[in-house]
Image (tube, rainbow, N blue to C red):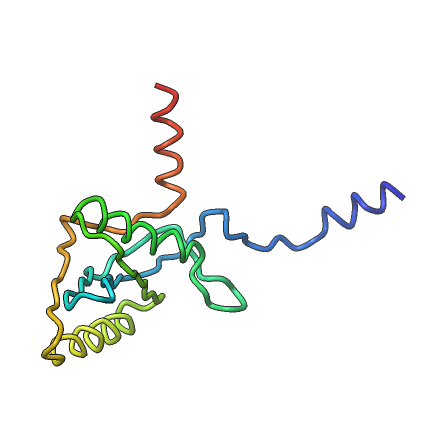
Length: 141
């Protein structure tokens, strides 16, 4: 019986998990706004390596972590509180650029909001597992 379970387990097809690094590239940008303020902040399009979208759903793994990265930057780096953040992503830079300009135009055309583009030198998304590895290595020192 145990031998049968070992054979079945060894022949099972491996599925990628949300907790491993992938081999693909994903492009993303973020939008941040305090809902009671007229200022809207948008990042440039960033490329994140070693990341694959979920196979069946097409969702971005670590979605909440990417949104949290932007929220922490807004609150810590720019000293803005109560920010609501959203991350847009795609495997295709061209498709994401269309979405980026559509959202940017929506805020620029609205006379009640002011749009601020966050330069790539100030903020860049990073793979969540990369920051975890850096954090654990720093603790060893």
